[in-house]
Amino acid sequence: MPEDTAQLIAYTLACSVPVVLIGAIILRATRDRSVTTSMAVLVLIPTLSTLAGIIGVSGLMFTDELQRTAVVLAIVAAVTVPAAVLLGREQARKMVWEKQVREQERDAERSRRELVAWVSHDLRTPLAGIRAMAEALSDGVVAGQADVARYAEQIGSETDRLSRMVDDLFEMSKINAGALRLDLEPVDLRELIDEVLAANRPTADRARIALRAEQPDSRIMVSANDQALGRVLTNLVSNAIAHTPPGGEVALSAGASDGRAWARVDDTGPGIAEADLPRIFEVAYRGTAARSPVAADGVPAGSGMGLAIAAGLVQAHDGDITVENLGRGCRFEVRLPLSDN
Image 1 (cartoon, rainbow, N blue to C red):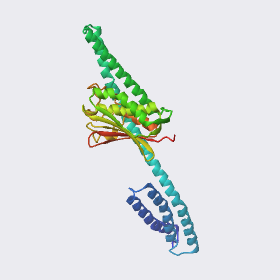
Image 2 (image 1 turned 60 degrees about the horizontal axis):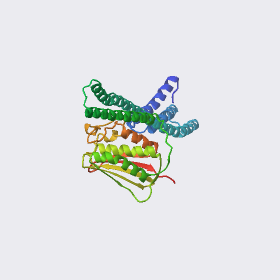
Image 3 (image 1 turned 90 degrees about the vertical axis):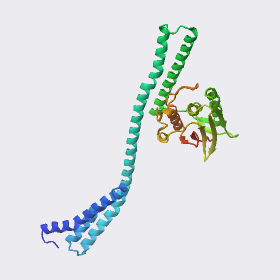
Image 4 (image 1 turned 120 degrees about the vertical axis):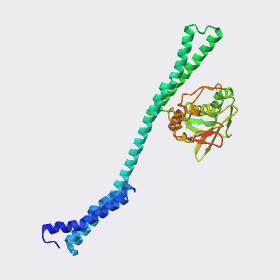
């Protein structure tokens, strides 16, 4: 037992420092584990080192005073360790949330950069074409009636394309800003598919692609905005037609399972590169050159935002949209909650 202050300090350090060192070793060994474990160890280190120092100073004599001190420290540990565990879990959740927020911010920034690059490139293309044709008409380079009519028709087509791009930009800005509000009502999914089929059949015929639908006899009622959901299906079908070679097939199908309705768009195109699948619903993301929308065979070029808009509209319906490659082509699937009515 120490007789003066110097010995008291020496005994305390001799007994408490090893406990602290052991705790540091444990912390290092568990650094890759949960934050909860680290918090519990951090709380126990000062408690156990205090107990070790008191025992050392007492000369290993378990007196009544030492027993009372040990009881107090045990109660403190019993209170602080559970609190440390709870705080550790809360801190872990906060760290995960902050990491997700940072990742979302990075993804959003990358998406904004890509959108700016897309706007600077894709909007210039039809504008350049319109300017060139307008100058040819105004300078009298094109004088024949048939040529003038053809140039005028092409200018109208490019103007329509620009209008669609602007509309898509406006829709995408509302989705990204969280300002999209939909009035939902019971809708028969089969009727929407019939409308989408009829609207896209002329485009499919010009591209020499078979367009068909497979639906059950019974109604499939979903809680949806018919205009927004119709746009989702139209975007998926247009995308499938644009990337299916002549002589191929695009099939729409619908059904219900596990309390949710589903609609699928299958095509017989080249499929999607595995590296592109995780980003296929990002704004203006087109992946490989094979997936860039190019006007051919009467199929109008898209804005590059169709799939991103479809994903945003599906999310506004509390639904899910997925994509996968099949043995031949790929499949887009939309799953929505069934209506109570």
